[in-house]
Image (cartoon, rainbow, N blue to C red):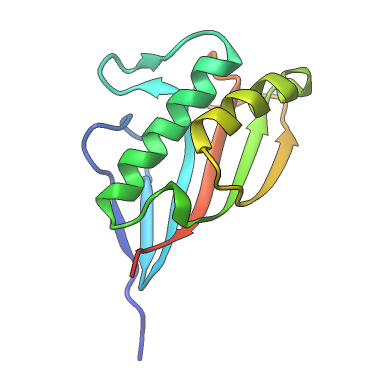
Length: 131
């Protein structure tokens, strides 16, 4: 049996800045593209600080996951891309606050730049659908 990959970009999240969908889903497996801390109402970064951008990313993940019958507690792994590793501790505090008690596997990587001008952080994830 061949699995079909379905792709989505739900409303109430930032518009993709390239030729991709935010969500790819095959069976119960969900992948969400790298997401910056953009306020979907304005199309602009939620702030110029790591805390506001991190919090906005998690809010966007909540919207995207809900659109495919999942949630933050169904995340398996998150990749975090930081333009400055000096922001790591402050990102961690905002991340922990926004994620609640769920602690999925995670990787944090320092990068020299991100596609969205002004973005300090982007994240992508793998999750599963709810039963």
